[in-house]
Length: 360
Image (tube, rainbow, N blue to C red):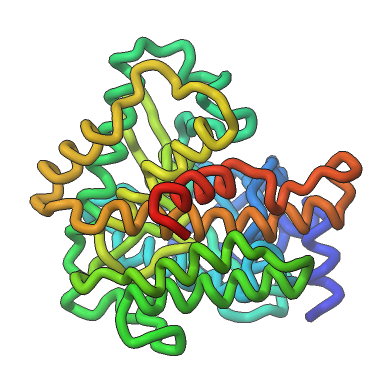
C-alpha cells in the first residue's frame, strides 16, 4: 500500500488530481477533465464512498456529470471478506437491461493509486427512502399520499421480479457461483452466512439465537432450488426515485445466485424489521404482504415457492449482519454504556418471532 494512496484518501485535492489523471487515461476521447466538489457522505459500513462532480468535454460537447467513487475496504468491517469487483461486474452485466443501474466509468484493479481497488459510476439524482431515521417514522415519503407510497413500493416489487427473470444462461454471472460454500445456490447462501455468523462470534461473543435459526434453515432446506440472479439487498433503501418513478437500483455488493423468491423475502423482511422489529407502525399506504406477493407473482410469472423459509433466512442473515455492526459500534464508542445492539435490534426481534412460529 502506497503512502500516496493513504494521503489521497484524506486529502480531497490529492484525490481529485489522481481521479482526473485516471479518467484521462481511461477516456482518451475526453478533454478538459476537471474533478471538483469531492465529499465523503454519510454511508453504510462496507465500502468507502466519495461523491464528486466531473466536468469534461466528450464528442465536442461540454458536460457535467455527478459521480460516485467506491473504494474497496482495507480492513474487516461488516463482512469477513470483500470483493468490490463483484458489484461492478454485476452492474456491468446489467447495462442496457430492464434493470436500471448506474452507468460505469471504469474499474481499477491495482492498489497503488488509492491503496485499494476502486471503481467509478454515475451518480443518479433522486430520492432514496431513509432508514436512519426509519422511513416509517419520518422522511420525505411522509409528504406523499398513501396511493403514491403504494406506487413506489410496487415499482420495487416489479423491479425485483425483473431481476429474477434476468437470463443467466449465457454465463455472464457465473462469477457469483461460490462453490467453496456449497454445490447449489441455497447451500452456498447457507454456507456463507454460517461462516459469517461464526466470524461475528469470534470477534465478540456467542450468539445462540443465530445458531438455532441456522440449524433450522439447514434442516428444513426446500427441495426446489431454482437458480437466478439475486440482488441480495433488495429494499426500498436501495432504490432511487425521481418524479414518482424508480430510476436506479443501487448496492450490488451482496448479489448472488439463488431462488428469485430470495429477493422478495428480503424486501418484505427488511420492511418488517424496520417496523415491527422496532415497535413502530408501518407507514400508511405501504401494501400488505399478501398484496406484494400477488404483485410479484403476476410480474415474474412465478409462484413464491418456499417464501416463509426464505423469510426466516432473511431475518437470520440480517441478524448476523447486525451482530457484526453492533460490535463495530461498541468498539467505536457509538453506543450508550451497556446497550447491546448486536442482539438488541429489529432483525433479532423478528428472528425470535419467526422462531416462535417455526419452533427453533
